[in-house]
Image (cartoon, rainbow, N blue to C red):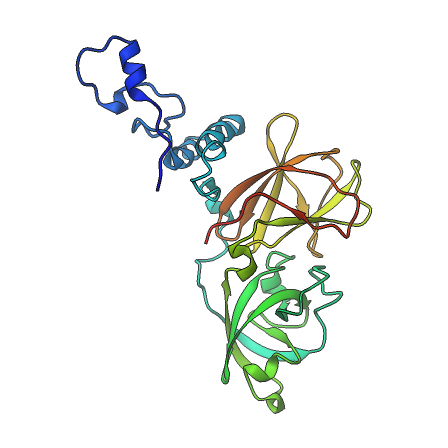
Length: 287
């Protein structure tokens, strides 16, 4: 990991120091862990110390915003947002249906036909927390990757309703209902592209709905930076839009948190009243 190092020598010479002094003895601004350098470890230390949002943003900007060689996902971790350990395997029953590419509860239209799509049971869908999740589904005949675009209200925890043409890839069609296992995996299209945004029809400076799309892992929280320099959580609706009547006209700074607690900050996202436009962001969640 490359580190952004403050010029300790210049600080020491300015003080006319005549003997070697350990780097950690110098009062370096933003060096929250006291090791003499300002790097990604200081972001974590600053959060643990409970610094203000403005101070946290300052150290993030120094470490990340001014050094593009450091991945943007090294911002912060919010342990309170961790849903489950990465790689957790779920089990349930699989069925099939003919919907999900259009009009799914996650409202991800248009959904690319490059993906197999699936509806997730109500408990795991969890008020849209797993909307847009990319999951690996395994049955007796094989394993396929699927995009969560819809909800299965009557399903028990762990259950999935696969798209009709996908079901035969994991189990014999004549069985109709079969045991399946699944786990969340990174979205493949996020490997070489940033997150993106889509505004809801009717969005203006007075009220707006917004989705985060192309996220590597499912999103559990979206916040915007208000005029006081504080991050404010935006309420998420079960149909997978975050909605607010307090944000104004933009451009916006967003903090995105995934289900593993990793956070990224995305700046200068404009407001768009055209609900057909997909707006590219500048960051992506970590692997």
